[in-house]
Image (tube, rainbow, N blue to C red; front, side, top):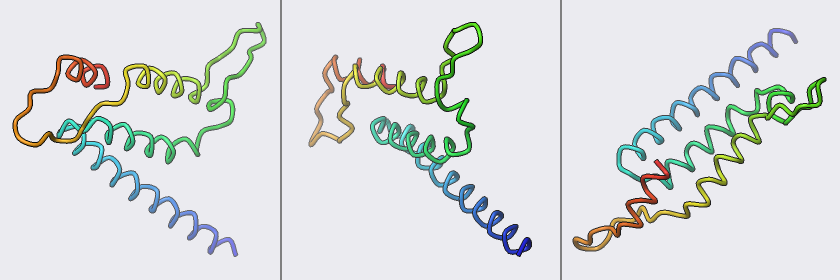
Length: 113
């Protein structure tokens, strides 16, 4: 039984590594092409893969002995995500014909990046 459990853990670990490798490749390609909306979705997927291995104290906010709050990764991630939402969705679709992006679109894209 112990040998079978070890094989399952190994197989599961390999699958996670393969999924992360594919996600990193997608992330790289989307960032290079300026598809920042897709890039953000890729990063969300990577976060979901990696966050499952965090201890609860790392993931959630915790109160220290001196009554201060230590922000967990979830709070940090949510804060970053809310900053992206303030900027607003950016249009990653290629326009038909040659259309110069507006100044606002360029600013939003730069803020997302």
